[in-house]
Image 1 (cartoon, helix red, strand yellow):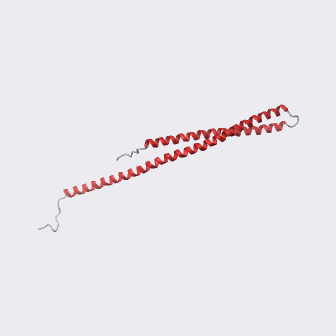
Image 2: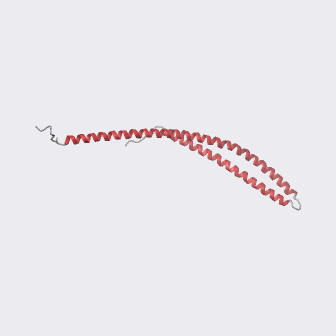
Image 3: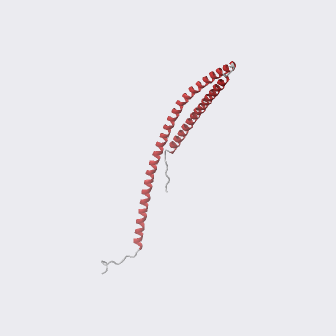
Length: 160
């Protein structure tokens, strides 16, 4: 039986590779965003813990060095958190852009795959027709051979 050959297989392979690259790009940006979000959560936890420690230290005699250290720490952490939030916002835009590119790449791949499927179905129908025609030809040949090898049978109209 003949083998199906899709002439656009290199194009399909290229589209698959492009889609894979888009998936990797999206994963990279998403991972970076998740790391920054985790850092932001850790900063918030640290600030909450530091505030609790400072509040506990305000009972009785107040240590002004401790209050000053907390104020500096809080200011630095807030500035770093602001930087993280700004970077996360930029990454959100990159995630959306990467996601859109991935969707476009998947659509392009699926279009070629659909074309391949249609061509395969057409090829399969042609193969089925050829096989059916070949079987018909073999059947007709076998019937003709059978007729040629059988002795003629006497019929009622030929006896004279």
